[in-house]
Length: 112
Image (cartoon, rainbow, N blue to C red):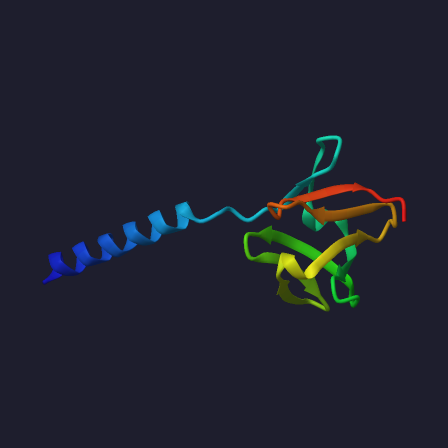
């Protein structure tokens, strides 16, 4: 009985590990147009501008994954689909994060 339990446990563990390795890795770094990488959490507070015209202020980006953007606002984690985001404006007012046609995040200097 103990061998059966151990075998089932190992089988379940190997299945879990293999399914996790096939999932897309969450992005915690972002590359700017000059090729320099920066940690998302170090960007400080940002404004997330949505396609419907609304804005989420004072957010801290934690990660970008295939499902969307994970951010913290008022010490609570939230997530939002990339398709709903027009751009993410950094508080310095000079840099913007946008998404290409493959939903890859790109940071660039803004002129608006």
